[in-house]
Length: 326
Figure (cartoon, one colour):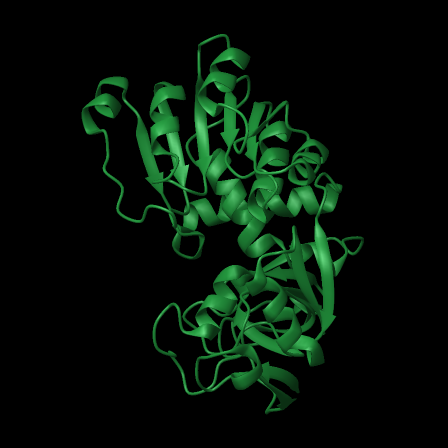
């Protein structure tokens, strides 16, 4: 099969290769998927660059997200699954061979069925961006008739987060850093958009909520935004945080949070428990099948353009998702 891979970490143009390697075969409990798309995420390029530590396997095919068609199954998998259209999650998490290849063999649970009408591009965005958003919005209970703050509403996760919160009956506030990003958040359906570069976030949120604050925060920058969230969360509110790059070791205002009963839910979407994963798969597959979500695929590449694709992800100038067409 044709695949992209690396055998050591480093710069994209120095370590990524494209060529032919042996086809995988499905083991017991696995399905073999003919991939049509492969989604690139920041974690994929950081892992390839070496920012997540030493390389874990002698040869790594990158990318955890993808979509395709099941063409074979291993023992103990119903042969009726052959021909199913699926989206893939955790393709390269703890495994050497991810989705940037013509074929992948994965445990059948990691191949989530979707309808024939679903495009492969959006399906390749479900594994990390949309799943991270789904968990952040809904893992701590329903948000119907609640107010949710989505931090970074123009990002790949935030864009889905706004939509999922709205589809779930919430009123949504989001923060952005530019007028261009404000338009992205507006397209996602946010009720209140705050440019944190030139507006007082705390004052704007309290004004919008009539001083009541918000019930839940989906947070991309836990440490950096802690002083804001401390002021705008309601009693028994929740911060669901999946990042904290600006302040990696924040000082927690423990007693202020304790007396308000604030819950902090830090999570890594790769390693959530199986019950939560089942809910995410069901919810996102329904959204795909019903065409309920807008998608922000801003750039597509061929597998031969893998180096350029990784560089585009790394430079951070692109708003939206990047997908490889296999």
